[in-house]
Structure formats: structure tokens, C-alpha cells
Length: 132
Image 1 (tube, rainbow, N blue to C red):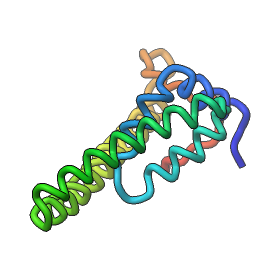
Image 2 (cartoon, helix red, strand yellow):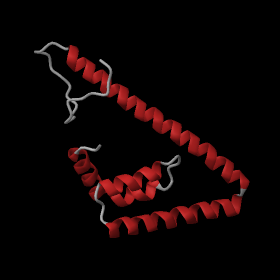
Image 3 (cartoon, one colour):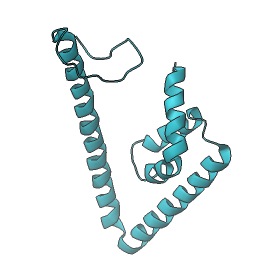
Image 4 (cartoon, rainbow, N blue to C red):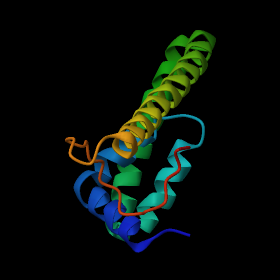
């Protein structure tokens, strides 16, 4: 299901950015934080480091949301829901942009002359998810 090279990439990412990813991921809506836990496991993040960063992230997000909800009530709840939608739509748009940009570069590489200078996108798999 997941290739070893992908697992190695995830592992390297969590070695470098694991704690900050867990903290920021707590504030991202729509199940993204669930994916963070899965990828932390796939990336072989140590149990102690995972538990510590998750405790820190949970503490920060709980205190932040509790304080906002306690002081501002329904207004903040409505605003947080709206911001969650904006963040989700923005993330989809940015992801879509990079996906289609990658597809365009691949199409350019396929149609360019053999002696032309090619743009190279590093991908270890010969399979492509872009339509040709």
C-alpha cells in the first residue's frame, strides 16, 4: 500500500519537523489531525516523542479554544467554523495548484525535444497520476 521510499521520506520529515507538525496540526480542521497521527506512526516517530508532542499540542489547543469560547461564546464558535471552512478550501486550492502545476511540467517534459533543456521533477515511481 505504501512504498518503502515513501515511508523513508515520512520518517525523515517527522525526525525534522515532528513536534511542530503535531502542534500546528491540532488547529487544522476536517480530520487532518487524524492523518497526522497515522503518518507519525508510518514515519516511525518514537512513542515518547509522539506522546510528548501530542500532550503539548493538546494542552495548547485546549487552553486556546477554552479561553476563546469562555470569553466570547457563540461569536467565536461561529467565527471558528467559518475560519475552518476557509482554511480547508484554501488548502484544497493550494494542493490543486501544485498538483496541476506538476502535471503541466510533466507534459512539457514529454512533449519537448530531446535536445531541449528539461525541467525535472524528482519522483521515484514510473507511474503518473496525471492524465497524458
